[in-house]
Length: 145
Figure 1 (tube, one colour):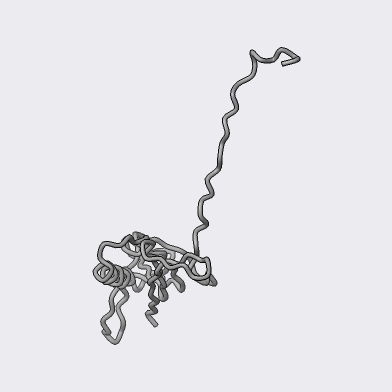
Figure 2 (cartoon, rainbow, N blue to C red):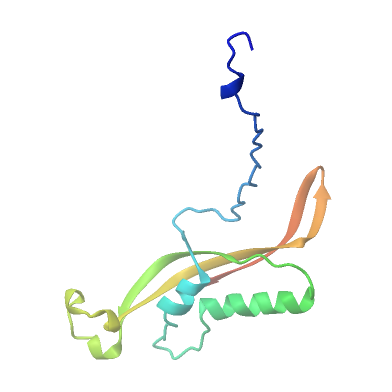
């Protein structure tokens, strides 16, 4: 006021930053990488074994566990699964067996991951343990070896 600056002054707006909760990582990261369910569904094959042993895909395994949990915990909230994979296996379709790797087209290349783990939370089922809020977590681990 003493400098007659009133004409240049504005009301102060108080801005509060809302703390975003830190994403909890349920896994030991080690030599794994995070992938999406869409990547497994769209970019990966189900490997076939020489012994003709039947298997299901990683994404089918995740889907079966999520479906079972949704059936058992009907009406609860479910987070998206966090998925980690390791040991990528780059392969080729049978008709490209005689080609060099550098000569393969994208349509002739195949990919799957030997190991996969996943986890998801049900945030509507919680328990307070010594001041720590814990949500029910469900997960699974698979390996093709």
